[in-house]
Amino acid sequence: MRKGLPEFKYLTFDVVGTLIDFEGGLKDCLAGMAAEAGVEIDGEEALTLYRAARYSDDAGLFPDDLVRVYLAIAPKLGLPAERKYGERLRDSAKSWKGFSDSAEALARLATNYRLVAMTNARRWAFDFFAKELGNPFYAAFTADDTGTEKPDPAFFEKVFDFVASEGNSKDDILHVAQSQYHDIGISKKLGITNCWIERRHAQKGYGGTIEPVEFTKPDYHFTSMAGLADAVAVAPS
Image 1 (cartoon, rainbow, N blue to C red):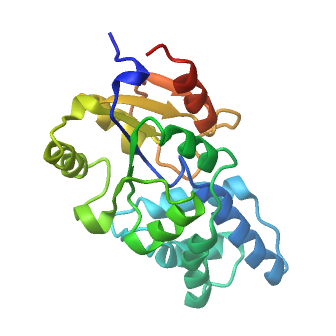
Image 2 (cartoon, rainbow, N blue to C red):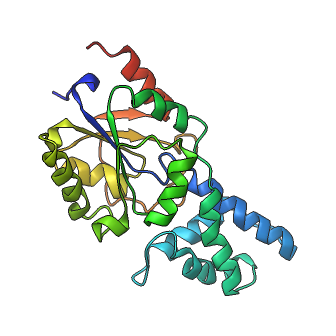
């Protein structure tokens, strides 16, 4: 049987895609460049091109890697293939918005749990994301802190070690994320209870996130962070 929501001490979160609308941020920035260049782009097509370029063998850390990604996809979108535009796409991360329900839901959840961020983004970008979300996190782990990226189990092990240093275990964690590939599949394999936030429930495909080899059925499933917060509020203690 899965554990009840009130039984956890920690909620660990994927950030980019779960709490921060990176797809919207990317599309808005690219659309602005397209308008300046006098061309039109399809947002979903741009995300498909982004996904293919982002998850290549020569990928770097996120979001610094957006410079390389932009130069790879710009010709296919009719955009100028100049580094300054790639840097503009990278720097747009500083102003990406949280989903409309993210900050409020996190504030509500912080009254019941220790919130821990687990992001493949670099620390400099996470600092902007955390501020956008109202700085709700008890602790945070970035690609800079772990030296790796999810779905590498080593990333999760860093968090397990932190929780153990506080006298707790991975059984006290509910991992919350939208990415089947980066989070839901591996958390299941590692024996962590997980919660899938299906942000793209009203859209086809995986957008800017790599498609998993196989779908993993989550322990909990909501289409928004508000849904999770509401479920916690009514869960019997």
